Length: 357
Image (tube, rainbow, N blue to C red; front, top):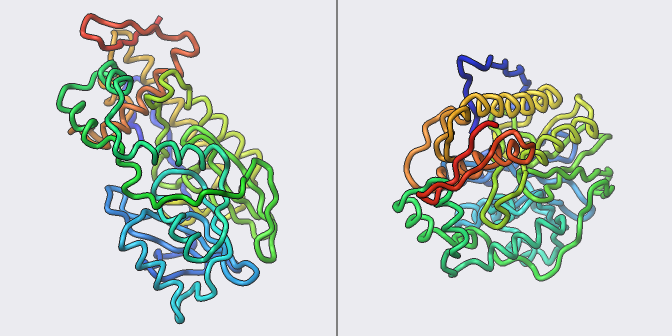
């Protein structure tokens, strides 16, 4: 959810990125975007209607990066790819998952079981996925209800949250009981090339990107997207977290670790060139959003009251979009709170209000 400009804060200009790979493949098809690197795309029954996955030529088959949501449509697309005439007829040697969000990890258990191959993830992403999947069937905890009430949610939104709680497992096949750990800076040989693990934080706890210097390719997952910004949120499990600081630091880290001349393979939208310009824009847009927030907080406001300062589209209803917007608003507010720029006060209505010092 990208933010808009306001009269008191000048707009920043989006960089012109290059998209050299053409139209995306249909589900069940693949396009080679670099030597031995295939672009796959899977459908999603969500507002964001697709995810890009990647297959890298490996010894004896293919290493896949990310897996798609657990849906019949995704399973059928994978079956087509692995069929006798499919682009990945050799099968999978291993599966890399960038992070634990369902569109990335959803089919991991299905794929690793089908091919008897190993799952490669960072430790925090694997364990957090197991924790969230364990919420399936549980009632929403009281702490989480209080968290969203204090952000300003009304009774209708709370009831929708209660009904949706524990839904993480709906789109996630049971993970394998073991995994191969990825850590920041690891060098992993896939087929004929070495790939470096570059870990980012903020969007998720320990997001793994894969960078191949020889091919000049970066598989960026959700860490760098060309047309949309990644969600950076605070959640009830860690209400005082400062993920915006983590996110900004990760943008700088990726820029320092990966040169500008790479082809970026993102999880959403299309492969692009112009990494550093995009990283600079993402950083500048977040700093601009924080400045708009400072202007708005001359009067006390709840988390739900600052959506207009942060997002370009109206946040309506009581479903998933409200949750994402609330989490991201709190990420901005916690960033200012952590730096002692604002104060937070609990009102008689049990809602937190934030104001500039």
